[in-house]
Image 1 (cartoon, chains in turn red, cyan):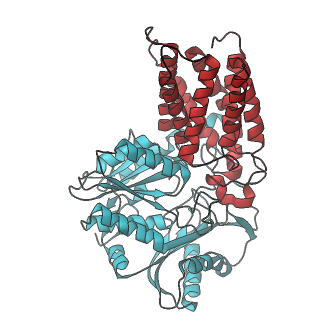
Image 2 (cartoon, one colour):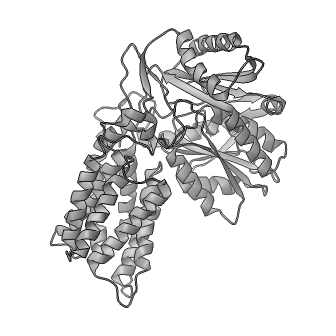
Image 3 (cartoon, chains in turn blue, cyan):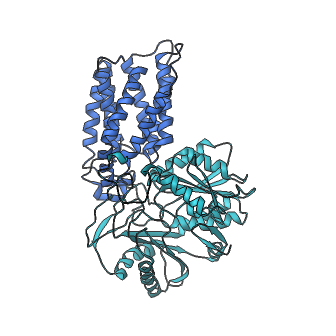
Length: 224
Length: 340
């Protein structure tokens, strides 16, 4: 799992760099025009941190090593992104790390169940810190449906790739669904009615991250 | 990043990513008697370190609002200011460093503008020093253009932030306790309201394009300070008329009337010359005079800006004797100086 996470983060950094102008353009429409720039800076810092990591302690379990990695990512995002996205995404990764660290070492659940547990903790962390819920035109509008779809897939016995494919589709639909929404949280809320008709940049970057994760896991070369 | 921009935007910088640190270095080079820079954290500190026994005042936020906040570090105002990237809140590590640097043993007050990012990052910084340094915080939210309701992130912190920093700074300098300084800051925020309009947009250097497009005959009414679009768009009108758009909602929100005395603050957004700001002040003074509201103190100039945006904001603060005394107290910063 730790290798898949690292592949995801590196791949996400590339995609975010490519998409940075588009994310910034979305943010210019209803925010302050810096979302792509900030996310690009944060994920570039993650890549630098990954490059500098010592080899994983062979005595560590895969789940423990994954938790360490997620914690590093959370701290890096909080220290480099700024704005609301830094604390929100950073907290998501820290909560996911804590959820993994709390799993029973002797008998860890199946990988799909671990993935959903981490995702649920991450999304709950964003909701609690941002005091937001779905329907407010935020990243939660992509992430909550993604988490629900992933949970349903796990309960239906799906494997990790299928679970993440379900999450990806739900996140993409959720991000698209923010377009007609009236923003009530974050900087877009200052626009009132004028926020309607624009896709939320945070929901878009969230859907992008889930999309890259699903793509990496679907890639047969990366062991989950 | 700059590599994504089609052409080099016509602005003064060496490398776009160095704008904030080089601007801070310039501030320190120009005013070595007033400030020093913690370059590792992009924090402006008062020269000479913390004053033992005095409440430390820190603020911070995205850059692009100069002279806010770094220009207000100095005697009688802030002890430190954390500078984020342009229009982006600083990160918790910066405010943590600032808080530790200014702690003189009497606690530290965080002055935070009400934007989700600023609030979250300051909150995380306060958690990082919890149990070590007593931290209080005041969130400014004076922008009447935003409906304060369940349907927004709450009113934005704008012009009143400058007045809070000056007045709470004077209270701290007078040796007041953290609780008293906080109460004074809360009082100023509660008695002050603002609203602004833009005649032009602004260009975030790293983005390279205007944040919003505005027609030659249009003004954006109810703007914040981050180039974010406002609540409505109007045709350009006389300054008398435009001043009325800003003053009326403030007067009614504060419930001001005959016999009240205010501090009237006409602030430029960065791209409007002083000659026009005084024309605007003249309009504001006429409107207030017509309603029997006295101007006890005033401030005119570019103090909380939005890069090169043209336009202005009006802030009115209801005054009493305590606030007048604290406003008049000596201050010596790069951007505000009197009596010291």
